[in-house]
Length: 148
Image (cartoon, rainbow, N blue to C red; front, side, top):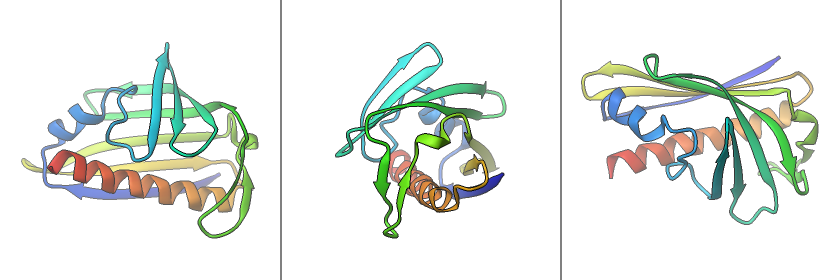
């Protein structure tokens, strides 16, 4: 199993940051999201400029621990991409083999650490690197969103 961790610190309380991201269907803080619709425990997300809908299943949510996890359960649309590093990947085989977890932990009263962990079955190294970079970008966007 491949694993990557993206992380940042934010000069806001853990409770304040968690209040922003705790709702699985609220992705205003996540860059380049065109639409997000929740159907039960599944959110259906489209990205600006990409004709692909990603279905993510919420598998764990804990307000007290300030964390949730989800897995990719379906793609609708073309699943092949060229990564920022120039490699062509097909994300279709990752359905059922991906788990993402976001965690918010206090560092001080007015500062927290946010981790975005990605687990992906072996054999998807290029995709793991690309997705991890996207999660790091998301965390930087979150930081800007909550400190504006």
